[in-house]
Image 1 (cartoon, each protein chain N blue to C red):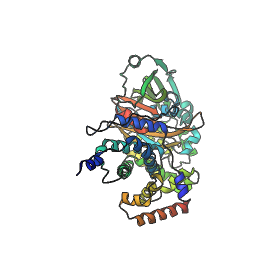
Image 2: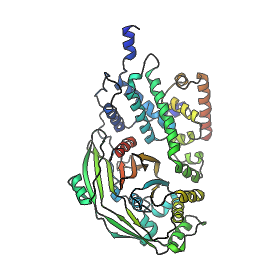
Image 3: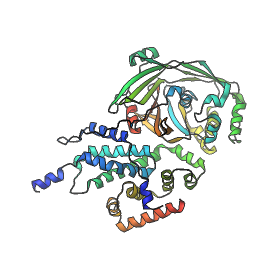
Image 4: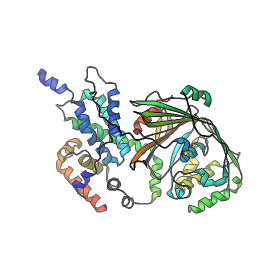
Length: 324
Length: 169
């Protein structure tokens, strides 16, 4: 390792990013008058835009995150939990709850495939709730498509033996799954989901999903901290951390977002006063290159939002914060 | 103050040229500093936004433009460090649970990732100086001016930091 080697690690900023930042600076209000405006010349960034291919409708991990666990109240907090790679060895990278719990998860009402609707108003009318839109968009970003997916009802039947088996497979031998939960039935009811798809210069760039906060019903008397501790251990938290966290968290208003091992980073974010989670992943593209994708979850005003996009994280955050 | 000098001081730089020249330097400063491209883009954007908004305050008779810009970048980096500590408590738990040292993890990564991981074991000051040197492309004299250290001190710290990285490589 020497000077030359350390200099070779430099990278050229992504051309699409540089172009967007330049445009954004141009839009910023000046602090004082009489100053020159930003030169209008632009860097041509044709073909540099990466295309979002993953969608919430078909992403089991997101679907699981949004529906699972204990979202009972009008507003929920999202908390990111890094997932142990041993767990993805069992469930696959997508952390599919169905693969984890087998036939114990049953879809009672199938939402069907997403359908494209003509307008945001039409989506709102069909979905039965007011669809919120961002008041701020990055330059050259436009709403390109509105989709709607129907309500979903899932029944989850607790299986103490299955959970104990999972703990054993993961090498967790100090936790006993309470037998009294065996056979208990819970329901997760999700209303219609509306997807707003935005394009940046003709390329799909951002998707915003929204739905009223899912309703989760569980039998009375469930020891939530104890069950939560089991879930946290399965996800990969160390024993002491899981116990401490399980006993301090408000399980009635918290949704855990599993962060898969292939995520490059995650953080808690503030979306206009609501606690959310931002997760960055890098995934291979069809062209053989790698592209970055950012997922943001938050809840506000009785609705759960998920945003996925290939724009810069600060742009996605600004879009999210502009949603009323 | 003579009129021509006052106009020269107050004149703005050529922003188009400044952007083209400084964007890669600021971006790589953050990449070397924090080892994450997504963070680097975010922090670079914040730096340029702050600079753009405050451009009328820049005085070319006080400092070179790049010196002024990197003073902003360094403050952005400090803010980022503070907020990262405050916002990601569970990430630390995840790191604890991983059980692997930076050296262990580094052995499986690309060169850039390996260097980033190994740099995470250095002090904040060492990382900042390495980022200014190799990310921003500053020489030791410019780094000394930016940080308030003496030029010889900068050289010594960089030498030791590189030795520490080399030993773990």
